[in-house]
Image (cartoon, helix red, strand yellow):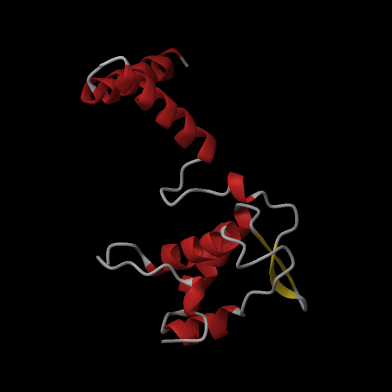
Length: 136
């Protein structure tokens, strides 16, 4: 294994693309306090070489992390964890906004407490979204 294994969330089933494993690994390190604001990430080529990946794979992960405001890259200063990140607002493993996941969990808990069938809840939400999109 490599020096930077902690930056990669391995996929036992092998279905998660390597760039997503890197993206998720960095997010997890930030969420659990393993990486803090200002901490430097390895250079793209160094991480790619360490993990046996193409540089473009790591570049894609870094690009998505930068677009999400989790990392910043400055020529000459490298790639670092961005300032002001609230770990509670990081994307979840599914990539969903944590507020959406929390709202969905509340809806499911309420439906279950009221004895409503959860499979029908899923269909009802999809139908409601479709109705809103038709009106838009």
